[in-house]
Length: 248
Image 1: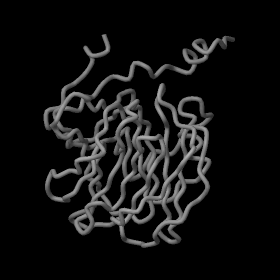
Image 2 (image 1 turned 180 degrees about the horizontal axis):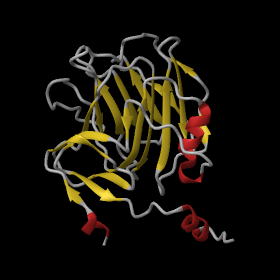
Image 3 (image 1 turned 120 degrees about the vertical axis):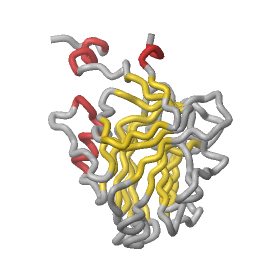
Image 4 (image 1 turned 135 degrees about the horizontal axis):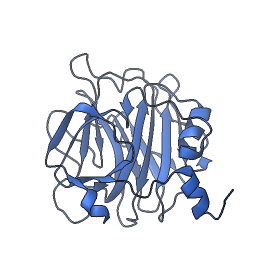
C-alpha cells in the first residue's frame, strides 16, 4: 500500500540536506491547520527561475504553489493557480498579478511548471508541460527579492507567508495535492534547460539542478499535515514505454 511508505512530518526540520529524488510532498485535504513547507535559502537572489511539478484537482479554490518572503517584503514573489485553471505570478507585493491563460494544464496528471523573471527588464515567462506563454512585462527591480547576508529570503510551498519571522499565512490559497521536483535558480534559465526539465526522464541529458533550491539536496521544515511519500508513479523509462504500448 502506498500510504505504508509515508512519513508523518510533525513540525519536522531537516537541517541536513535530504535527497528527495523519488519522493513527493502530499498536502492533506482534510485539515483546518495551515499546510506548508518552509525552505530557508542560503543566498539572496536577483533574477529567478522556479520549476516544480504539482498535482491538484481542486477546481473550487485558488491554490498557492510557491511563495517567497524577504524581511522587507513578506509577499516578494508568489506563484499560484486560479480556480479556473489559469496561473498567476505576483511580484514585489504589488497585488497585481501577471496572468497566464490557456496553457496546457491537466487535472488528471501532474503538471510541470517553470516561471522565469528577469529583474533587469521585468520580463516574465511561464512554461507549462509542452507549452509556453508569450513573454510578459512585470516590474523591474534588482534586489527586490533579496534579504540581507544574515537574513536571506524564505520560500514557502503551499501557502503565502505574511510575516517573515512568524508562521502567519494568508487565509486563501490553500493547496490540497502534491508537489515534487522543486528547483530554483538565481538567473533566467535557458529555454533548452527548461525543456530538459519538462521532458523529465525522457530527456537525452539531465537538466542543470537549481543552485538556490535543489530537490536532490533539500533543507526544509514541514507542518504536521504534510506527508513525505514515495512517488510510486515515477517509473523508469523502459517501464513508461511499455505502459504506452511501445516495446523494443
